[in-house]
Image (tube, rainbow, N blue to C red; front, side, top):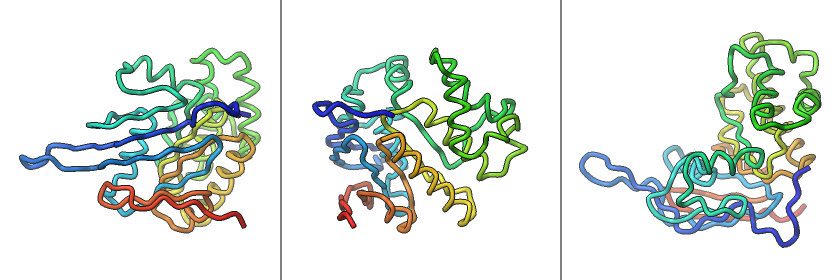
Length: 236
């Protein structure tokens, strides 16, 4: 389980995040002046209409994109000035991703999709972690199947196993149920939240679904590229 020390910096800090892009001879503002801090073990949803900047924000916080201005600290490290190799080293083993489109390698089995990132980073117990997490997501008996032989829900389970096998401190999930029917999506959401709780992972979840956001501890609402509401849910 990934647990931060009591005096550790928060896993995510952003100040003044702004992104502009040239469009039609002028600058289009995608994100403007976003400030936020996400603490260790928090379960946070990011909501907003299409085009509000949700995925852009996620990419900035994860170091997959760079802001026009502003700063991001991820796992206590300032991202500005880091090269791609440094960013990759920072994310390796500390940051995980789950995407709407699964992003599995079609020529590898479910087991190989989970094991490969661990093997590339030299994890000593890669095989053990792979089998354990595949069992956690209920795919122990499907581990030898290729993505094309799996349903959409099963493919996303493989993606979850791949993410959690690395035991990340922070997990970014971008519409992880968006390509699934409602019943399958609900099961995947339950599994994601259960794994997050079991592993103690900080989770930032982009969604357009208010019902999904209602399952999280805190909601960040974007509108027109601005953070218009940051609302913590009261304990039941």
